[in-house]
Image (cartoon, rainbow, N blue to C red; front, side):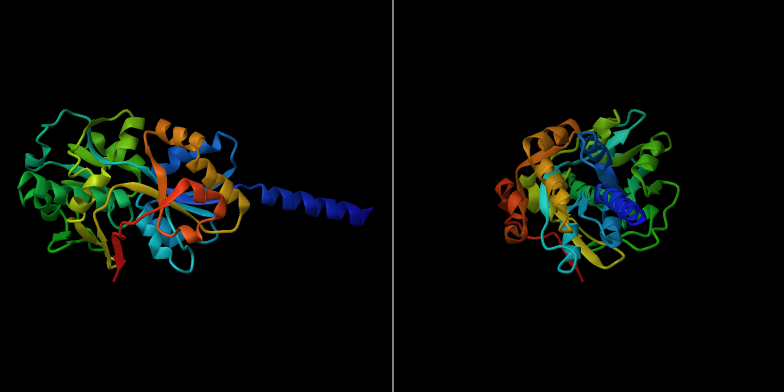
Length: 307
């Protein structure tokens, strides 16, 4: 009898462990959609971080989700072998007090950005400023807002040191909640459009040539290149969320199937994201068979290079 009870306890404990949910590490900006997915009954055990930190923090997770799909290639070949692009976003300028629509001409403006060494939104915001220089024909925009107020240098690439050395005109945050709270302290912040809409923020739409929101301007976006303190080179690319399955857990495949199917796409739209139809992958041979019908091969080259 004691042996039978012991076996039952082991089975119960094992069952609890097995039902702990799909282990996901994801960018903070995807936390809201993730919570909505969980509300559908899918069990999730999430770890929230910024995209670059997600890459460096992968341990035993089943899935990684980041807001720059190309970052996943940093996990090749040991931890991942493909990425799946599934939703698109863009960068906007959010504000609390009214600002001039010619924001790029504002002198001594105080701005807020995410940390470009940890957050994809952070280095994407710097790319937007560089692209604004090209679009508006003004080579002083990045310098006016960033370089003269930090140790970030605009040379052939935008070089980002480990210590940013910001002054009072730039607030650099490590979480989006802190960035949004900064709205009462700064003239404006750079943030994802999906988040601005979900938080009911006032924001300025940027031209598609600079907002990193349109795939047709991919070649223009690539003119903006950053070098992180880790010595990783990243060229501009549309803001596209990507994921990869890192384990053999069948529940991870079920989660991925939900994101890619009709119900998942509706949920992404309700989260103010633009689902990709079809979703794209860089290596369809390595994708689980159950997901292949949702996908097409991505023919574009990676925008990231560790050097």
